[in-house]
Amino acid sequence: MSARYANHVLLNNGQEELYLDFSSGLVIDPAAGAILPIHTRIAMTPAAIVRLWQLLGQAVQNFQVIQTAPAQPQAPTPIEPPAAS
Image (cartoon, rainbow, N blue to C red; front, side, top):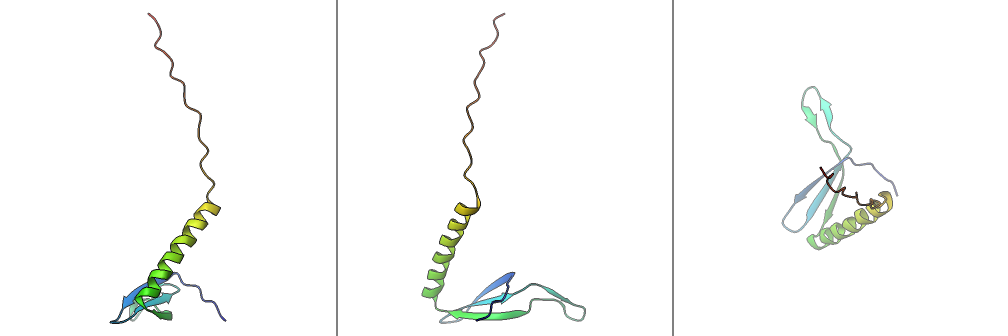
């Protein structure tokens, strides 16, 4: 198995499936301008895309729990009564 890094993902759809096109980023071609070379395409059914979306959502939530420390509650600031005049 090989792994490829993707910095961009494009989602396209056909009649029966959805396509995920992966690219590592924009390339500037002087003749053609900026192009986005696609190195991998994955075709999935709509039901499979829904499952992928759910799994990605769970993975992001788990990542946020692990990577971000919960905010520590701060002690309330006491309110000073107005000075008597």
